[in-house]
Image 1 (tube, rainbow, N blue to C red):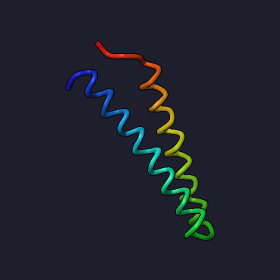
Image 2: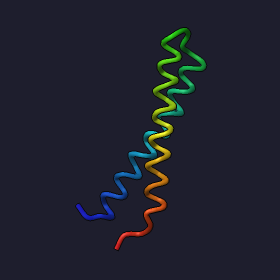
Image 3: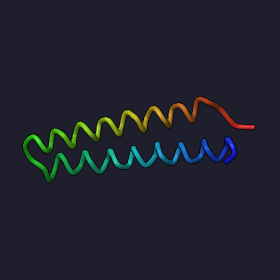
Image 4: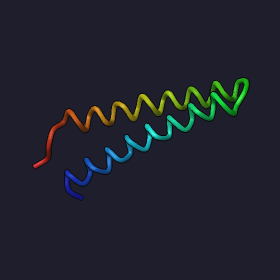
Length: 65
């Protein structure tokens, strides 16, 4: 796979993590209660942080040749 293809796949993974974080936050705030809500929320914030780092890396690394 070319470098551009790998970069595209990496950005899709970052976007998927950000969408997953949205779903987990909504789930933990509206449907879950107790310690399970806190665990899902912690997982959501981890996905948000990881997805944000991936997207920032892809954007700041510049174009491929």
